[in-house]
View 1 (cartoon, rainbow, N blue to C red):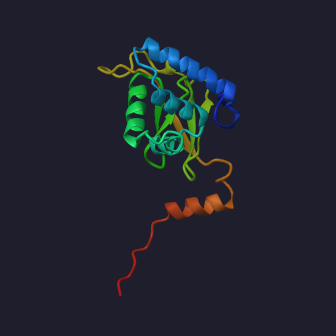
View 2: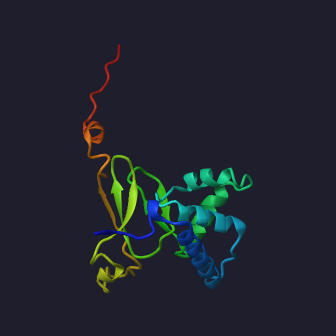
View 3: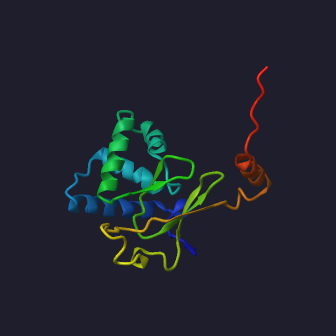
Length: 175
């Protein structure tokens, strides 16, 4: 198991610039105009290796682009996902999260704090899916999330939090 280069904290401004240049070329190849808003949403996503939600992307962009609406951010992300220019990843804490990295990789997800990290697991590529797949269904890609606890949450506070979440609560008495 190895981390994906260029994810999270080690994503440099030069790397983000390369991703944005590639994004512009892929948009044009897909017949999609490269608008200021579309590029701003993609750049914010490329800069944020935490796999943000649409709402957190909107919040990060709203100060710089006050005319950008939440609905526009959602529409842009949906459009980019349909064209496979970004990836939508289901989060363990609910809601979809997004990834500008569309290369073959998997995700480690902390079930306590929700942190998500890109990782490459040898043998877990799309090529590992049997060509026959499921009768009547064409498999396009393998999307894997491995859920567990990150190093921060394995400590005493994380353990206590995880135990309290898994323990059923006693019903409250009415007075």
